[in-house]
Image (cartoon, rainbow, N blue to C red; front, side, top):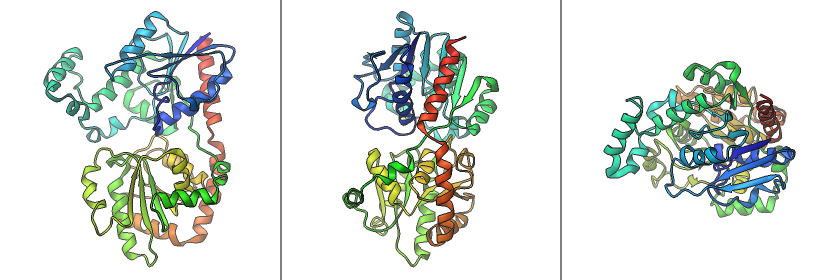
Length: 400
């Protein structure tokens, strides 16, 4: 059997949520498929950090000068002329032409719940072509879609649902959301929870290396940590405001470290975090390597993760693995994934968030309870489990 895998999302230097999921699963699942031929489809030569995938693995570099619509058009062309028996797409963008047995992963449907957060970044990049492209999209879709980021997500996901016999998702919450918003039959959806780096990884970080990394990043005081895209969906404004309120009340100085790429809503926060009065203790670090993120996770006083919407929440779960307590919102998948191992807050009232920061910073008994619970909880969330559950779905599809 020939198993095709879209590895384009995984084959990048700076991986975040979806890219990391694809990379972690592919490098674990491919060596176990040695009784089959595996074809990895990428835009450029495969990076070295996939490891040894085995002699049964073919890498097909599909060059594409346009830079966009690679999955829908360039990968479609490959499917027309050299189609595998099964195609696995880890990120819900399925080629227009595809095998009968195509499987994809839909991580969440935030674009359905929060349309205002998906503004027209695509249209802004079109420049003076914008009116023409908008007209063409409207005509081609009979008025159903615009040339916007939100509508691109809506179209891609609906096209994927039509194309795929089986759909994977990452939590029971996301499964319910897919069923509710996209009207997919429950029996077509399989939940394959994500994994995180385990405690042994964080324990292996050398003290000297940790100290060196923190010094290089300019961190000399205790700090709260935020990991994720700096955007409205992640409640970044509330995170900063709650922190500033707590800092005024606290007798002990503590910094805030923000790690992630800017997203929708960050422009409104720039003046706040660059104010000379706060810039000394709010550190905006942007994207950081996995190694540096690990040092930040294990060194933080707590992770602040009060998102409006999460399909899974790797940063929160992985911070528990690092032995660091988490302040989390009650929204999305976080209560399901974190169970009783986090300090949950209602984000409608900033005072409840500030009170949680007080508790997590000064109540040592609470801290130790959450750390112990987290240490037990994360053992069930491994990338090996994710890969093997994904493999089982692929194999079942091959028998149909």
